[in-house]
Amino acid sequence: MKLSEAIKPISYLKAHASEIVRDVSDNQKTLIITLNGEAKAVLQDVKLYEKTQESLALLKILSISSHELKKGKYKSMSKTFKDTRKRIDTFKKKRFEVQD
Image (cartoon, rainbow, N blue to C red; front, top):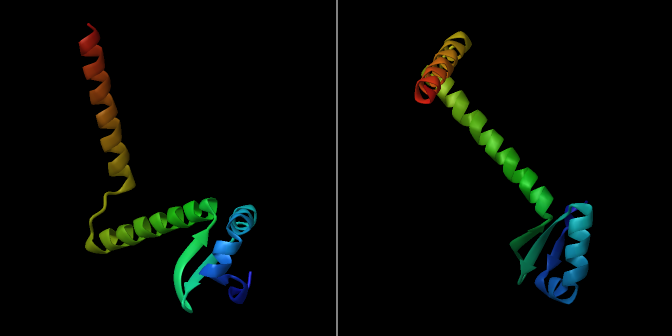
């Protein structure tokens, strides 16, 4: 969709609300709503919004991971698996001790 087609004044939204919501939802569109000629709000399909939020969360995780890696705050994969196996073994021991 062209950006020029995605900008609508609030008066258009008021007059065509159900039609706009249906179109945005059916076609996973995003509309920019203006008030007095200025962009003031965004109307977006909820599934598209969720995808955007998930993408942002993944980007944040990548950014944090990159910073931690640069600081040297990481654990090797072999150490991670060794620690995980140790935790599982400890859990199993505690579980069997409680049952006895």
